[in-house]
Image (cartoon, rainbow, N blue to C red; front, side):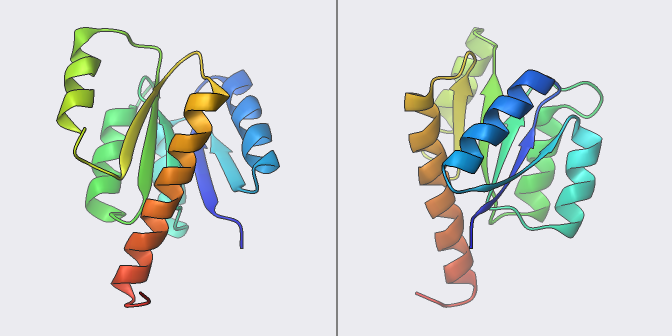
Amino acid sequence: MSPLVLIVDDDPTTLMLLKGVLDLEGYSPITCSNGELALEMMQTLEFRVVILDINLPGINGWKVLDYIEEEAPRTAVLLLTGDTTDKLSDFEEKISDRNDLEVVRKPLSKNDFIPKLEKLTEVSMTKSRKKFNLD
């Protein structure tokens, strides 16, 4: 079965591009354009990975990330951002020891994006196997 991936971004072009790439890579992508809808979807479906834009209107990516960490701990997260500030660099440094969270800066590069997505998918699958003692 193809890994289920939620793509959350308020830019329709980014959603379409990422959905197309993920389809070609063998994933099952679902898209949504805001944090509110993402939270609703995560209450009914279990995603392997959430590709999450940080700068969303309304409920932003940071709040969605908080929800995932509390309510969906087996879900890995790939954060998308166009931000180049030191604040984001500090965040990347803080998460450098985590294997279930990655950051990709826009504009996206397939050579950077796909390896991180593949790694996060495997991390999420490993967490699920451990939960159900399948290893």
